[in-house]
Image (cartoon, rainbow, N blue to C red; front, top):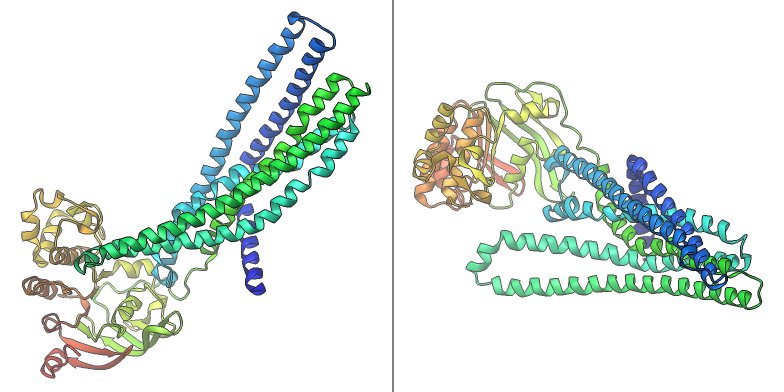
Length: 576
């Protein structure tokens, strides 16, 4: 338990060092924020002095309205200046926070793109989205509240003491010795709050992943009548999250109460001392009122620091997710500069191994050859490692052992961008964005001509699909291709691959979930698509395998054997 707590503390300190490093990028704006806050503090001193002077003239010297009118006008002027400085303070703080958030979010996007699937193996989608969105937003108050208040808590109380002590050193001593109680209790309460914040952030990430899984599987839940049960589970999880949030708020309110208590006690002691000094005639009313007005202002920066300590906890908890992601090294072994061949490549796997998480799933010691211009089926039961092998080929993950040769050249020596430009990858569920059919077809090659689009649709047996749409190629699709059936989306995905003019095409279960007629059309499109290309088709369906030339059978992450398609089908092994 102690070791775990030490690791958590070390992680938190590392995250805060990262936040302070980010603060250096906006130190100019933060300096303006601190200077404006000091300016507001000085205005408060002048206001207290003017108010004390006005009261002294009215009470002790029995002067009329005309005598204090100039002081009242000056007070109004100072109040206006204080309001303007407060406006500038808020504006500058917001600008500083916006700059930090924009910088971090932009770097996160670029980092995730640079890491790619190979660098994000084991990371779930929902926590990543939570980190990039809400996680970055949680940093705002750290930079706009906590850091400025930390500087002010170090400067303003000392400045106020320098002003107060010459007039009343006894009150100054009370302020001096009571002030440390506020940050002390802030730290003590903050430690408990820090654990709650970390736990709450983890709970939020898990809940986001749970909800994403439910949304993606909603059709299946409805079919099997499990939607109501899962809705009750979501309600239960939401209630647990609400209760945990209230626990965090309880700690925050306890912190505020403790800070207000010590500030109130300190101010009351100062008032008692001033009252006795006034009663004994040792202190003038003007000085007594000035010190009494300044006592709450002395505690104010410390109280604000304690209240903003909650913002620090939020920022540090978010940074513990953000900073490790920004510091994650890029995957090694795929950053060469050789240009891949412009012709259909010959591919060879030599002793290739990869395991998810080091020991689960994946492939082991795979040896396989894909001749140039051939169409090869990769067959096997679910979980045999077929999709993992395809991901290794397209560079989404890196082999832990062995190598992949492209025309005799190690894949790691090829320029990754140039290699990807020769690839077309059609996953089990092709992704379509919310946009027109044309925009989705041109994702891989925006400069394709109308004739090339027409040829691709014809080759993919998708012309009839577009012809039946109300606006043809300009028809809007919903998110994930909403509005079209699975078979129609598969054929449009094949057309998109055709437009790309790739020399190596990898298709992962292109006919999964399709009816016989759609499967037949996709297989016809597959044969046309495979002309003058090297094609790897992952499938366990007989009709799809019949459209290929050779079959590599995969069992438990290994290539068991490679047969001609006729031999494989004749042996009745298509569904092993």
